[in-house]
Image 1 (cartoon, rainbow, N blue to C red):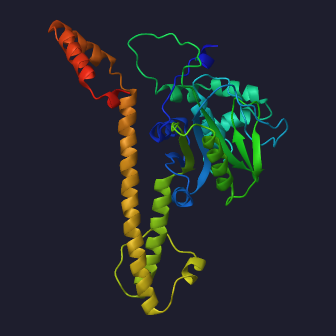
Image 2 (tube, helix red, strand yellow):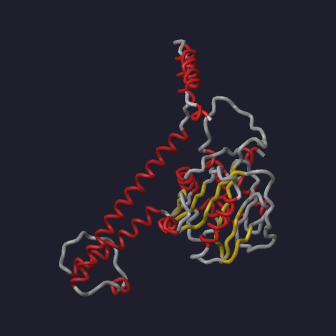
Length: 346
């Protein structure tokens, strides 16, 4: 039906998914792009709830061994919507993560599809007005209606899949496979290692010149995490400052008895720790500023993505035509192409 077919292509960008989360009602989570797969980088983003891997489809559909029977609490939906694999992969993580506040819309959807087949769950996603409208808010404005055609073997087609730990097991969730793929038993410490190995094995199957991969992580709200760390450190600094009879800013909240017991009682040690805490707070303040700047950048970029520039472009072309500039500019562009270095045009 019309609802199932009218889904646009969207960019695989953390800023896009940040806006998507806000619109759908997801809280205390965001999406970050992974530029490497080492432990140090993973640790900076903890907690990580799931990974999204985007790769180029080559040749025939890969046949994987899927589960016909699996944990009934695991949310798995077949992909029955065109152009929505990125959003569906994100939903595969969110719907299987009890630590994320997915908001009333996704909560109601999850409850509604309980007990349904994977196919019916896919149709339920496709018929969600809230999800579809949030997704399609990033549709590009076009001056002409372009009829979509099926992809051919010469087209570059990309696909998104999710890696999610759930109830002690790691799953690969690919809506095009017909069922979840179990990758092994894991815990909170080991699942990322196994998922990383699986992704690296996938990448190794491609030719060395193929670099068009994208890896995203669904993580906790980084800004909230930074502010929580700052609050705890400031509470400790306030406690130590009071003991040392040093003035310190008022901080809302209180330390627990266990947190107080972990602090030193000797004056020299208290002074050393207070200095270390102040340095940590300064570092966190810089990180908070970076995260705030990043979100402001995302907001600006999303405003530009959604703005309709077509009337402006058409008006500029009209003015250039009236001034007889188009042909001259076209000729200049042709000359530049002829004179450009060969390697720059290959």
